[in-house]
Image (cartoon, rainbow over the protein chains, first blue to last red):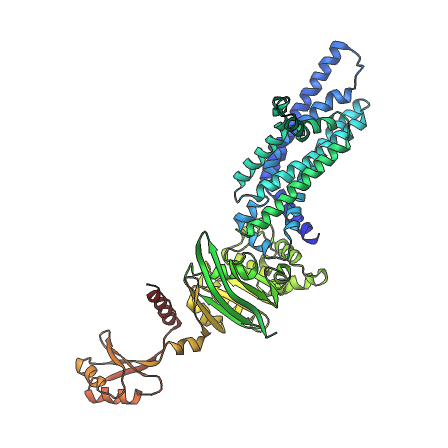
Length: 253
Length: 315
């Protein structure tokens, strides 16, 4: 625990020192903001066209926003996590970490937490959307909470995947490409499901279950399903575990 | 248990089918400063990395304070301060932040951290740069910060890989006197390819070449072993071949060879002192004795001799 917190604090400090973090967060917020305005404009258009609404306005606005944020994580996360191990490699500080009385697990967790907290900062800033809207009318709070739970859980799994990708290589560019590939794969894994539907129904079923897209959709729609929660938590644990293995195996090369 | 702090037993290391280290064994006693000397690529860094647990050996084993590096890595790492060849620094942190981070991961107890920090800052002369970013420091200061990093946990064993590389003459002198002042307080293993470094700081030397130990001794021992004879250099006012001829007639002389225009090198057995005879012969030839001084073999020569001997053996 001690080592994890030390590394987490150190990494976060270095993160927040770098212009990269601010550029990344800024660009992300800008894109999400643009999409959000777009959704609002569409909402107002619908309102003027059809008058009063019988459906859930909160869902009308926030379902696409949550889905957009989750999709954009494919681009945010690889850049967020790519430095975690390659940076130590290039500055020679890996030798310091690996010759200190730290376990590989402590190192991986410290790295994961540092990236995750930057992500939490982004999510916190995005709260401006529900907060400002709540002044204009009554929001369906349950849906907002469910959407945030989805972003928190899926984000953890994605960042764990990014940390794992970074643990495999000495170069930041390679790390980010690898993370990008893993996340794209996870997002679109169910595309092939329908093609296997009749020939290999079991394969289709597995692919369907693995599909990130279907899982995050539930949260964005306001449904917190325990199976989805377990899925993302397991995915996070799996990738962190793989990172620990990758880090230990690096010493044995 | 003996008083050996480090026991290295027949370690070897293979990289992609090539052995960079083979059958290296040695021990380091508590309180000793051991110099690890060898040309670049001899296997010094590899040996040090194996002792620190950064790199596992392909064969053999290492124990520090009785703990095996592979079986008990955390116990070993607690006792080691390591200065890698490239200083492991975070440019984005200040000196203070960096050293605090190192204390945390090295497990320095919270209550003594403040004290340790100010001690090491004083010791390494970092007071002036305490609050500055590591990335903005000069090469010499960075090396000192890196040394402070190795010292800060007050480790039993200090491993310093080329601690003076890339420094200027003044900085080198500073780092060396720093290392010398560690004598008695810490056990030190120091690697270098620069010979004066060893003479300046170490108690004992291991010379390594092509992944093997070629010699292991105290400084005096090493020199003596390779110098069964004594040499004197004689400077004369009027050099003539006759002087050489006359000197060769002296009993038990090993060799006489002219060196330069006015000097002659005379070699004779270690256990005799022929200086008086040599002087007499020269005076009697009328060559005019100007100077007569013993030539001690520098460690540089010892080193070259050992390494070339090794090469001759290999080829």
